[in-house]
Length: 283
Image 1 (tube, rainbow, N blue to C red):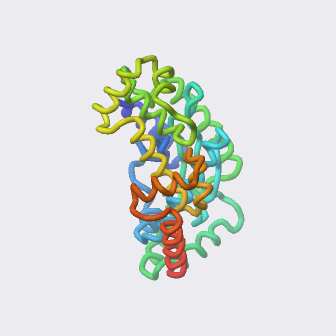
Image 2: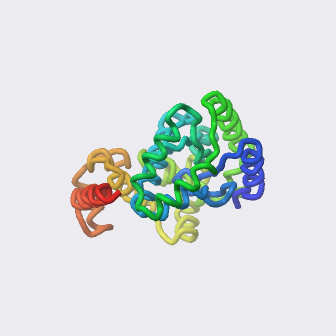
Image 3: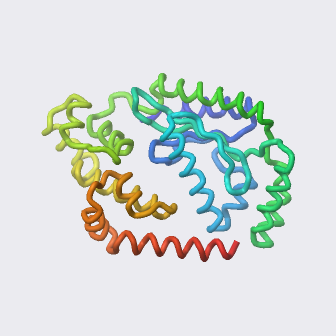
């Protein structure tokens, strides 16, 4: 098991020292733990509007990807104007997850005005509630933000060194699954996994099938296609998504995509693009 209690205690200490919401995510962006557990009252209000919630998730996905690409803490503003930061957690050269600070307002001239302008895009009922919650959003100066960013980077390093994201006694199958989640865009074979996690081919294939109900190859293909689908939904082209997810042959990618989702990747990307345009016209 992941050391959830110790992780939560660390997040709580950071929150008590700063007043900001801290969360820990796995390498696939899934939230593992957070303190406080729920989003801020303001963000919860905004998230009630589905189109805005999707935009929030897209902002986070871009930030996670940027932190992964650079291997460094990434500070950004969400589309509502709130300041957030993501620090990658890297252990033995492998990305294990992310430490995230979010839902604060940078204390700069015009920041609150920009937030009020963003609120005007909400529907009337949500906008009225959101305005009343603006005063509860923590504010932070740029100097304090940079100082806290250093603390976040140090805490991410502590999480990695303390092995908090890796279960004790992790089986070869679990280790292989985590590796695939982190390296799906690279060339991954069973032999690669066996060498890395010190087991024979028979052990790897048998334990993996027993643990996850599918072969290593099936998992790799499904994860690659799922990630490519997410990238296209976020705006990437078919070529960009297929290449980033480990496909060297676009025709093969399209064939596999059709087999899993029942339609061509270009068709689904166009549908997602139109849905965004419609959603964008409503907010």
